[in-house]
Image (cartoon, rainbow, N blue to C red; front, side):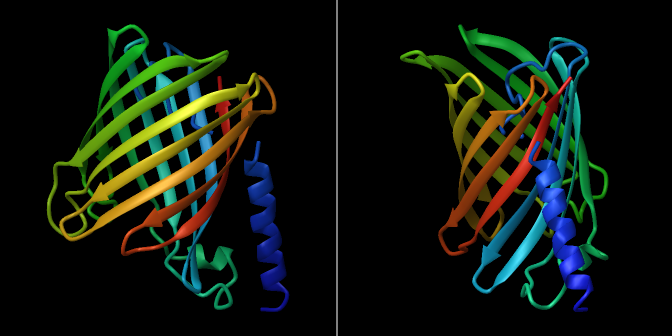
Length: 240
C-alpha cells in the first residue's frame, strides 16, 4: 500500500495536468456548425465533511448540419470515501460507467442574437444512469458589456421515466464574459429536483485558450441547502 498510494496519487496528478490543456464549450442553443467537432474531458474532486468523491467526465458534439447536432457523454464517479481508506484510482474499481447520447435541433433565433434549441437525450444503461429518456430546451443571448463580448443562457430538462432515482428535473443558468481575447470567465447556477430532494449548485469557472484548438479550464463548485459539498474541476476543450 505504501508504494501504491504515491504511485496512484502521481497518476491522478498526471491525468489532471494532462487534462488541463478547457471551459464552457458546450454550445447549448448555439449551433455547432456542419462538420465541426467539439470534445471536452474533465476530472473533479468533491468534498463533503471528511469524505470526498472523485469523478471524470467526457463529452463530444458533432454538427451534422447547421441545424442538427449529435453528441455523447461518458462519466464515472466514486462513492463518498475517506481519502485515507483507498488509493485514488482503486476507488473507481467496480463503479459503473454512465453514458448517453443526444440529438439537438437548433430552431434559429427568436430575436437577434438569441438562439433556441430542443434536445432529446437517451441513456443506454438506465436505470443506473437515471432517466432512460430526457427532453431538454435551451435559449441563449449574446450581448456586449462595454468592449467585452458576453453571453447568457438558460436550460431546462426533464426525465420521462419514473421510479427509483428517475424522474429528475433541472434548471440551469449561465452568465459569461470574454475578459481578454484568450481568457473568459462564467458562472453557472443549477437547481435539481427529484421526488424527494432539492439541490442547488453554483460553479465559477475560467478558461484560457492555450492554442487555437485547445483551451484549459479550472472551476470551483459549491452546493447550498441541506446537502453541502464543494469541489474543483480541471479539464480540456478541443474544437476541430
